[in-house]
Image 1 (cartoon, helix red, strand yellow):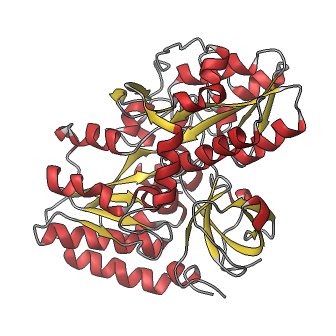
Image 2 (cartoon, each protein chain N blue to C red):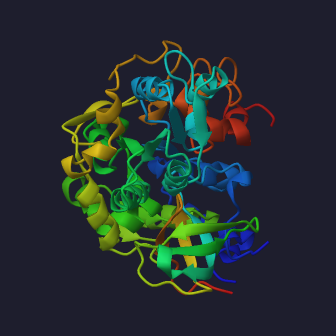
Length: 78
Length: 372
């Protein structure tokens, strides 16, 4: 488990509709689709929409809500 | 690793709690509303209320989107889900929200094709994979979630995916806050502001609370130390007689918000003349509908939903809980007829709902003086 990101929906928290975002780490940028492959704290990987942030890079920590990255956490990282 | 474990440090937490106690004036009472259901969850999951002096009271606000959804909208969604050939998609918690004649989960058990998705993009993927079916996404949430729906609709239009549409139940945060502030009987002394809504609309959008209503407001993160520090900042404002917007969550929240997110929302959505909120009634210009340019992707136009309005069950007191008038455990059916396994009210469904948070973490027992 990556301690720098949040666990997935198995924690009992509503990560999809509670207006709460989760931290995910960018593993790979899928430029053609405007998506990034990201990792959550459960070790699960998901394609995340990054259209609201502009360019992202592997290692960035993003706040992801409903499959869309809303913000980049300033200064966060391993 | 930064910004996770540091904000869960118990020793630091006790230190901030001590600083909070030093700001509390004897004989005073501080009523602080946490607007977002995510904060409610953090407060009870981490036992933050137990660290604070009894003079500090948390009041749970209307910021859990599934909790404020009226039964009529659930019935409208179920009506669409029962249409032949429809694949109806929604977030997990939405499946169990009771309508007047059952939930989406029960509709699924009776044969409707209802599927849980993590994101609207997942629903769009289902539409791509099932070109002979109509795929509907039931969209709920505040400004945190609306950009995700908007981006998905832009993708659907760009790609010409004609078998996809959304039923928008998106709402905005400012109108219910004004409605609460216009009810002076509630007597809120300060607000713990919704950190992730603020990533989209910006901390500055909450200045009306300080300027027009004279109330302190602190945009807060969701870790235990975030919440404790926000309480400290609120009490410091109160002690010095100030009312302003402060941004405790500056590591994520920009003062001006996310311009790309607000732009895509403006492209896809416009304000409805009015929208019904559970517990708060009809609030003008508080809901988002899909604009004319995207009308072909609007499920309400494609299917002609019934548009029913249903009163809440008589026993349910979610409305009073959502307005902070009563604590969850003061509801007549809390923990007896209404539990997370068989919820009557919306506040018991989502883990972010105030009733579910109290139920799951045993606070109701402590506040009643019963051994937990």
